[in-house]
Image (cartoon, rainbow, N blue to C red; front, side, top):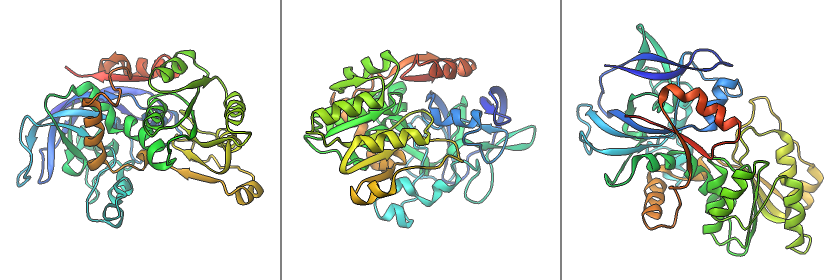
Length: 369
């Protein structure tokens, strides 16, 4: 079948709306009609050149919800009409990482940026030539063809626009606090960068019982939003946040600092490193340019026993944690309703990203008819 989708044809470049051909679903695959897709900063990295895709053209989007309209042969457990959230990190359930409870590191994740299936085949094409499929799901398309390893079935009474957010932003931010930073009751936590990821790191830290949840962002709207969902304090700079954290910890500093800025540079990590106490943790969740190098004082790293920890999807296991997060939402313990600041049509995707860069959005979302 044919569909419409947003692709990047060169990097750096912009999103272009084009007609795309989809294959028929094979065994273990689902044909889906997209309901909503989050405008995540990770996709923007493909247009800026910070994280170039493996194949051009490349159909973007990796955070979304959908309805099943076709099921491949010999694919049990799925039927037309099922609702789902896509995980941008597939889970095979068999590799070393899945078996160890670290599904976010599943070996299938090696193809997130290559645009192809594990066997090297493609499912999307333009004029007979294959194009890359972001994370194997491409949520910036009106329809897509996905592997069941990337699909999480959800209750049909959940609002699909809100449910889409747990496919990346919510789990990445929440898990960065709860899993990677290991926030405990009474902790002092700094979250740097209050966008679609950072706002949920704030929620996760508050949920875990942090005494001080300190949001850092130069944009007043984002600081206000952070305080609405759990931040106890907010500042425009990491220097102000560090000073406050030290003032409430007898000069020690924060227990953890979570870096969720849109484009990570060495100075962000250095600032977070200076903000934490002895044996504290810096969690680096945001993505920077491929060539960016980390710089921290080795002397302090060793003698103060500090830790710098990367976080992919907040060290969450999608098939377990996505349903958990949606249950927390249903119980009123996770705020998804206030996270969507703007809704867009697919044709307005570049405006959505312009608004993100202008600091107007916590999370912009494409809504499909």
